[in-house]
Length: 216
View 1: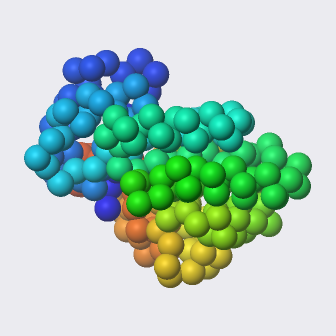
View 2: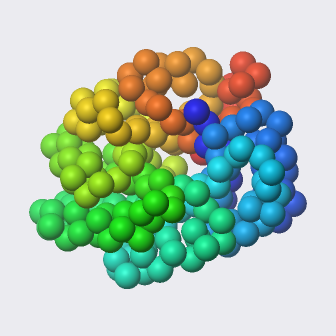
View 3: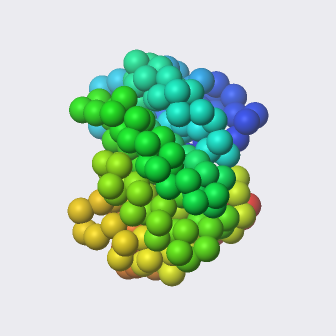
């Protein structure tokens, strides 16, 4: 269930290679890396069952739709199997729901039959009503998952947000919890609330029953 994550801007090639080694050893669902590192991860993960998640429009969501589409295309060509795109947060808060939906739809179209699409709604910036709207738009646009956070915005994944997201999208979509997940008890609470994927940099600590400090 875990996307083993390293999205720090100062991540090095050796750290990405180590991330991939750990993902193979612990059989994580995917590694989650910035677009530049997708090709490196692809080379390291060949022959394994570990997928490659990368991020699009990250971390603000305010790049143009054509930029997000281009990022998605390039990432898939490099070996990405899952795309975590950031919803246009400012457009949503401005009430421009058609723009938000079309933004997601075009990335979904770019990834069709090629990669899973997760929409990061960045819960820390949203009201309850906006969270519901964001999840509804992602579902109607054809995304596969909704995701709580980038890990670079305010707040962290909470069972309450996961439960709201699950209630909104129903049983057929995935719900990914990310940001501030550092121990197995938190993971259990989030899964119980409806999460089907966990994004964490503290993945190994979680698996080993330790508590990590200051992790994504």
